Length: 172
Image (cartoon, rainbow, N blue to C red; front, side):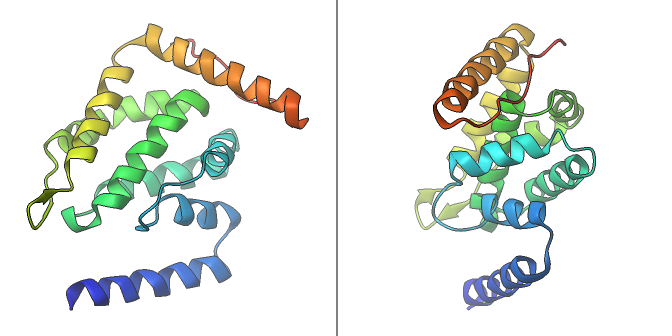
């Protein structure tokens, strides 16, 4: 019964934001939804581009950190928030790297995340993703390499599609 109520509440909130929210709020709602599928790479890339916008950046990061505060029952949203952070570290504004380091305590807490549905450990993906992000953030050289790979991939696809390339390297 609680799951049904939570689903109805989430659906009502989703409809409210889809009809009245800003463009970035709608993108974040889609990327961080509790649905059983991940966000598309094009959506993640759009959000990464939005981190270069002075007004959208704080909205993105505030939403991510709030989503990571979720309970065990919202494990999908927490996992998707971590996935988005990892993508933004590699593809977004360099400020994301520093801000994520500033919130390292929050990410580190997720290495102990637990949630079971019956005998199925739903928290394992969250724990693994949090560990991967921590390892990435502790290695400046690896961040440079990952951002370089992401930039090359963006440039490759922008040459194919005609879209302008974006983003830059990491200098930290």
